[in-house]
Image (cartoon, rainbow, N blue to C red; front, side):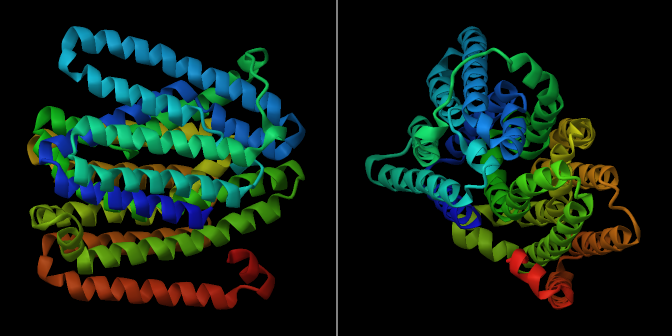
Length: 448
């Protein structure tokens, strides 16, 4: 799964770089607004059913076809209703955006038709990795074609929609005939009653994670600033992938451990993962401090170098979220969906409020600051919910706080970026090596 995600995200990242160099800043900002709207539609339509389905399939694989049919029917129906509502609103308010909305709707339908969650629940991570890498490569190839034929915001969104459709098809092929869904709505009510906290958490998660700040930037400042900020945000999303993949991988493992009443093994596995994820987050922050300017200029062009401070702030969020999100997401394994919702809701309220307050005044820096505050707050709530704030957990929080203070020092005194960044990377690498050497050989094999 990690390998497939790396291929997929790298391909999509290259596609984003191509579009950033080919499109105007306004058009580039509009493309990312369209992607953000599609994500919101998918989150609202799904209502947490896919995550609950992954958990249920991990525990009861014999019911996979029935669960898949209910999840698929509900998600497609939800996107249909939301698309019709948005079409009416856009037709009344801004008819010129209807072509964009049409492509956004296609992208949303393609996304919800996927059974990626089913492959996660059955731990068919290799098949999922292949499917997602194929989708990413389609997006990259499409954007390379646009360089030759000419790129517009609508055509760029069509390429992303095609990538989602191909990935969804590849997932169903990987799932095989034995997983063909039994379409129906009976029994869906009981699933929704269990999934709604996850659904609201997902909506809140998207509100503070995936580009709602880009929408606010475009609406209150300009599409040009939204385009500039998107370059830093794309780098941030790529670096933040590790913690999210770790959460997805841990869910079926912890679900079975909890079902077998082996809570000690579940907690030990999670703690090991969080330790190394904290080290990873610190390395990301140090790397942004040392080379953020150079990476932005090399990949996206000189006009994006001004986003280096925003990139540093966003990477400071990763050191918290790489630890917090796996802790929060795996609460589903324990049936504690409302505790997952508590962290997501806290972050959503903070992020949306701070975005509304700071973006009109400070632009991208305000957006990045809101993301950092939201991530740190959510992570603390989730770690506390998992009862991980014991002595070892508090030591980890102290380390994360030290990395954060180093990042703030770099933002206030840019001349310190090299010594602070190099020191952060070195200490994180030493901590990771120490943790690895202290693990028993059997745990090292699992850790790989």
